[in-house]
Length: 154
Image 1 (tube, rainbow, N blue to C red):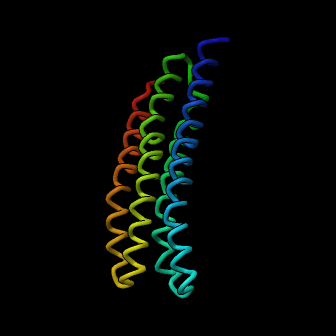
Image 2 (image 1 turned 60 degrees about the vertical axis):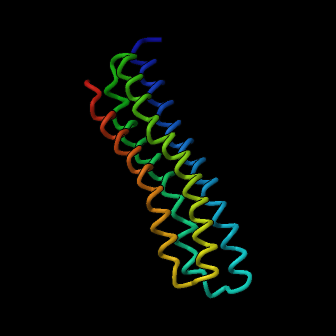
């Protein structure tokens, strides 16, 4: 197998890893507030709108992983060396790991926000603000992936 082929494989593996890790973080993260919201909605189904934002927020990490994968895939045909493929592989890691961990922890924060909103319905946006603080690190992971991706020389 040639260097360019191995490089393409490594870059593709990195793109897949970004999607998989961030997707796992989002899937687990969404499960926490979704379970909490289901309990609130069993008592008062009219509160769906106020619960929805807190439930979907941890899902954004999965989208960041997909964006990173598209950035990497867009460069795969330009790979000429294994080094370039490895650089793209390592460029995928920040968004993958940031998405994995921030998705899970954002889900826990959002579940706490659901509990807050269940007791004090007018305070739901405070829970959203707390969740947005965790989101910052997912965005930073995507930003670093973007910069690393653009640093690869072809």
